[in-house]
Length: 279
Image 1 (cartoon, rainbow, N blue to C red):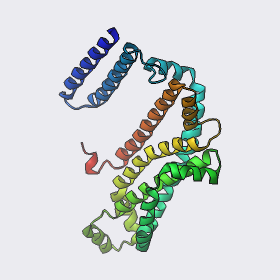
Image 2 (tube, rainbow, N blue to C red):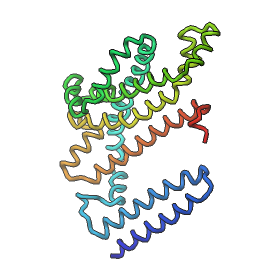
Image 3 (spheres, helix red, strand yellow):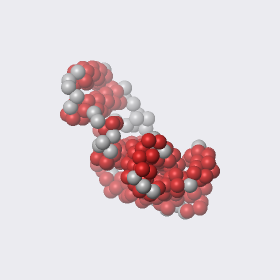
Image 4 (cartoon, helix red, strand yellow):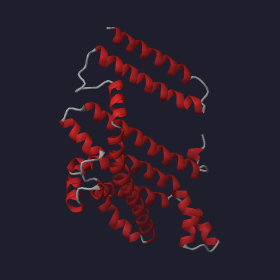
């Protein structure tokens, strides 16, 4: 019962500390301290419950055990990271988002494409990944190319829809003003419509960050060389090596949060003028 009591005390102490900081003036320090303290509290309570209730490592390993496995398996985790994130997710992200942006420009320039392409896009976006992944693995092989193809399918249409919507965000008065300056389509696009669409474009990019990593990992469940985060999770579950599964999950969480954070930071830098960034 000692571990259970320790976990309860840690939770109450973390709750009080977070409540106190929430009442403080909102600064960069408090914005970082609140989620950090909450995460530390969750880890302490997790450790206390696993030890106090003597939960089997097969069901839920303790954070200390996951940390030990993480430290002992850095070579494997790095190899999986390169295969899944750098080769599969990142390449598919760049190809899918870049292609969607170019298609969005074409859709905006030729409106008939919007009536024909976007409904098809909505249909494809609704297809389940567990149905598409095996097909793409059969088409592109078992290496990272098939995972990149899955990522392209997952990120293409969210990025396309957001970009098209953003390009339509200017009002009639703004477009009329550009016409009074004798600005053609391309100059209006570069000077007015693309800047106005930036919040929508970055919204699509942020959505795609999480979809890219999920798509690459799930696609590896349907065929992969003997490396990759999805492959490792699948085989480790079969071997009941749940500490390694959780170590891969930790890597995925860190990568996903970092990827999203970099895109959000880039958005803040490039759209500092937008009302959503003025806080």
